[in-house]
Image (cartoon, rainbow, N blue to C red; front, side, top):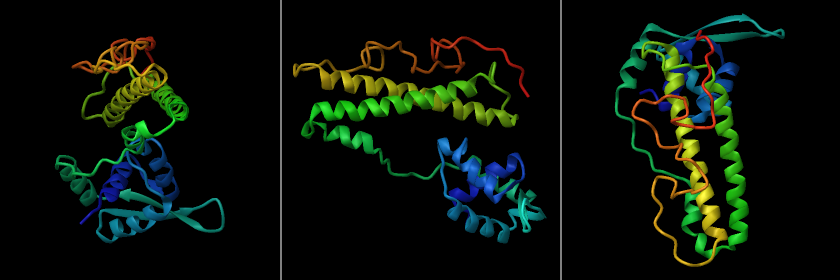
Length: 224
């Protein structure tokens, strides 16, 4: 039975043939935004995929004296991937360490927690900026039959998630720095972070425009 990592590899190979090194790089970005793997994990999984005839390879001249392997998905692999895409995902336990820390926040020094959440805030702002750079390559959603549709769908999720996380970090910093008086229960609006626009509330038809992130102006690059 193919593992989820195996399907992640098939997903990358369905776009184009790659070497093992290129697959490891792909697992860093863009797949690394939602699925990561080390090179030590990828190599044995590739061998299993080859044995199952889901992937094949050819040897080509490498940069050094040794030849390198270029892996490609087979028809059987494409069929397996198409069937897997529509299967319900496996239930996985959530493990959010920062959320766990916030659950125990009453035990810690508020000033130290503020530092922690400030670092996290800056990291999420950095990720959001990177996603927004990628967003500039889209003027609208590609058709579902396009390979770029997957890029668009995952990018929209990433922007929505980072905006939400940024708002939560702002709210935590605000709560940790204000007086001990009770605060109203936050709503998924500007109440969560009064200093922010409600940019993380996703519209019914996602558009990478002011409805999702008001500070970004529309761009009109040509699509490949």
